[in-house]
Image (cartoon, rainbow, N blue to C red; front, side):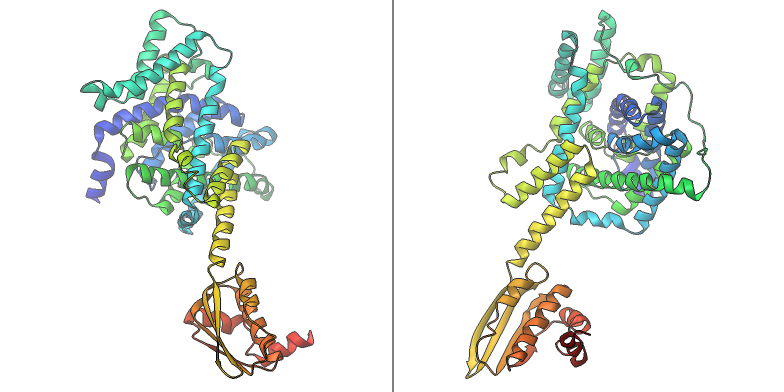
Length: 495
């Protein structure tokens, strides 16, 4: 336990402190913006980001990953807040947390292994595009000062790391925010600032039990929203954890992350915040700025609260142009540029899955829908590919006898090809079907085997099945009818 504590909390103190500070600054405008999207007071998003980041730093399964209020979750809250108000949102967030904890105990995090690389790439590219698109309002109908400051910010971000000595240990996004803010304040440049996004809270959050009736009617109102929030939150968190795993070349506990997200959302709702989840943009900012441990996530949440409550006058003067520059850096760094080059190298099916995931997410702003469609497409392409690897060879072993040798996987996608591989018109007295190199996966495959055996018997041939492995034999014995006279009689008699 002591080794784990040192590794997760104390192995990268300077890097985690600096990275957490950068993330805290980047969280402020986003939390305010997401609150506005959800139709609630800005402090609801800010309190949520503080609570979730601090709690997840202790109970989450992925060190160095940032969780807070997110746009994907905020979009799901709009109707609930509009129709029933903030208290019902807090109740829905509370129930969302319990659902996510249950998902962790049910080990639903293990389902991430069914998400293909092409879906993850599409998810990443779509998020990069959405992050960039979210900055466009800050660059539309503005003065030239905004463009100049954004360009200067990007210049600092990408050039500062080349400055001898300090460039290697001081995060360039933090330098960008400090320098651009100092310039704007010194010259009195009139540009949009964080304070213009909404009023910052001036008090610490307090314990707040949702003021809703504890009735079944309330449950039926919030349950659909809670289930949707839980699903989207876990999906985005699992995908973000996978990406951070790759960036840091480390592994994470997905099921613990499910439980951690649930605990964090319960804590957020009881302190007046809305539900949230992992944030890919801020997580990448954290990693790129040197954050690796749980300390960086804790610092991000803790500093966020300290800054918005006690340093609100200073934080409010940060130009949005500086934060836009940081987020543009995030979108550029997030996008998988290799995926464009690989369009010529990768199979068409892989490209279709990736591009479809990107298109659906960007068009609908619904991460869950895009990933779901991507996974379904990938599964269909995989089933089609595996289905074509099944072959049936045959040879005449003696006069009036034929042997069929089945090789490959027999399931719903290959069952038709399996059935069509046998010649039922040939006059034979004995048929041997060798299944030693085949595997039967589902009821559709068993039904296809029944049809083949019964058709041969109807033509007067004796059929022998050999080589069936134990797993296939189990499913065939359970669901097959070709060796059960009473079932055949029911089948042929229609009753």
